[in-house]
Image (cartoon, rainbow, N blue to C red; front, top):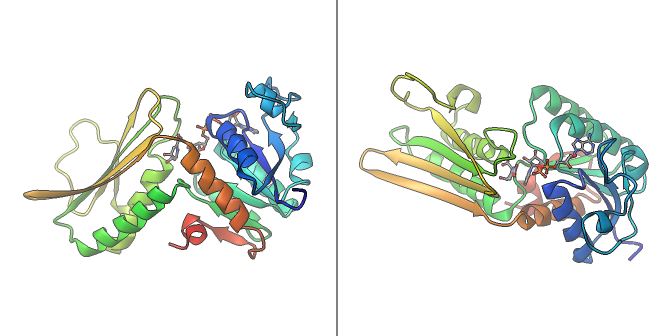
Length: 269
Ligand SMILES: NC(=O)C1=CN([C@@H]2O[C@H](COP(=O)(O)OP(=O)(O)OC[C@H]3O[C@@H](n4cnc5c(N)ncnc54)[C@H](O)[C@@H]3O)[C@@H](O)[C@H]2O)C=CC1
Ligand SMILES: O=C(O)C1=N[C@H](C(=O)O)C[C@H](O)C1
């Protein structure tokens, strides 16, 4: 047991944080060695298992990430952009693999993560599930096979608490469609239409976001032509799919060279 990789979960009280704690503890492939929450959170100082409403597991929630990371071989981080940037620097300092699931990262955040990845292994993906990563590959292939008579639209749906749009997954799918077509997503993207928008421009890749209830995550890639449509769909019904992917990434990252990787690397897709 002691020689299994030690993993710290950041944002441990969150929807994904709790799922990650359960997944790691049940896995038999890694040890949970730390649980980090933001300063002032009322779980700080409590045993994470007990705080989650179960049996104590001997890991106290801390608001000191550096101290936690120093004991770890990997950090799994599903939090928020500002926190993830801070954790990237600290994980690199501790030479721990940093698995980043956080979405809503902007160019300035990504530049800081790039800098950290010069010193440590970073695995980052807007969606860690096997199904979505397969869908990304399929999207790329279909977009490459179809011309711009086929309009590409990406429709995503998530729970009412989600704070960023388009979702990280929708952006992965949009990028794959753009890559398949040999264009840059920044030039082709049309997100959040409202008002008198004018007719759809040929070659655009459209995005629409639904938010409501407890939807875990649903993504459609629609290829719409005159007289026919092809629709690729992924429906997540359980956050365990993301946690399993993140744990797999943390284990895969052990012994890799410093740099930035994604789930395609981890899954060999
Ligand atoms: N890549 C993937 O496969 C997936 C990514 N996500 C992304 O993961 C992120 C988190 O999602 P949820 O768990 O639903 O959110 P959540 O809001 O339930 O959890 C986030 C947690 O991070 C904590 N946190 C924020 N700042 C912190 C700091 N400085 N230090 C320590 N903890 C901090 C919060 O207190 C909270 O407990 C979002 O960006 C979401 O889009 C979610 C599911 C799958
Ligand atoms: O916030 C979420 O919940 C999810 N976020 C990721 C995203 O932005 O795509 C992955 C998944 O869809 C759930």
